[in-house]
Picture 1 (cartoon, rainbow, N blue to C red):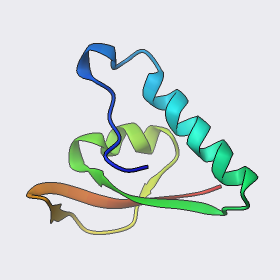
Picture 2: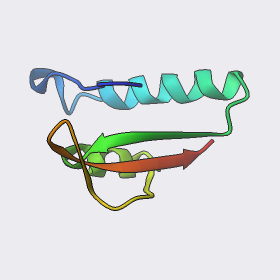
Picture 3: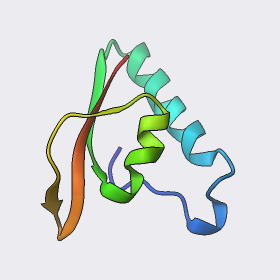
Length: 73
């Protein structure tokens, strides 16, 4: 996933959760054991609710606060 976001008009409808779930299932089918990515600080809670953990200190990426996150599949 890269530059992943749901337009604000469509948030809170389960679309993001469905998209992440699809991505995770595809990764499992391909034998991938975990997923790591950089998440904007404003999206961390969303990913934590889906089982992802913060694995870094806060850092700036393109001038925006981010955290590295990970989930074992």
